[in-house]
Length: 181
Image (tube, rainbow, N blue to C red; front, side, top):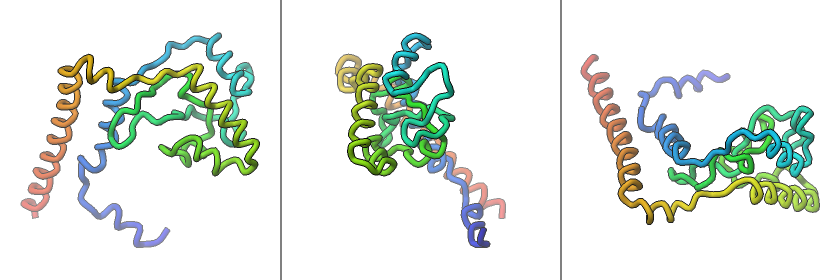
């Protein structure tokens, strides 16, 4: 560690800047579809990925020990809900390293960075696409906006109010910090 690394700790904390992503994710998660746990369906789905559901699961990206579930298609993009959620077909067994490295990247592009052989890439992409198509159904956001315009507008407005309050709290905190000195 270099001494300059302390600079990140010597800045005023911004509630809005540090928690905007958290709020966007919370609002997306609340809208996101989810599957009920169904052991038999999960077994079939995992076999589609080439996994033995009775054994320890392996990372679909690197073949290492799976330690978490990766959202194949992230919940949020450009601060908006993407339409997929907590469904079997959108959750893949994954190691922490691959999950971290993938982040919010497109899963197909990520595979290209993990698998060198083009035939293996193609096969893995097809396998995962079949899993996604078979076990995840995206929410049609435009359909919701059209069918429930008042509710959608109110939902968006509530999120905006939270962001506005966070910005206001940042301004008050800044004033308090300045006036205390």
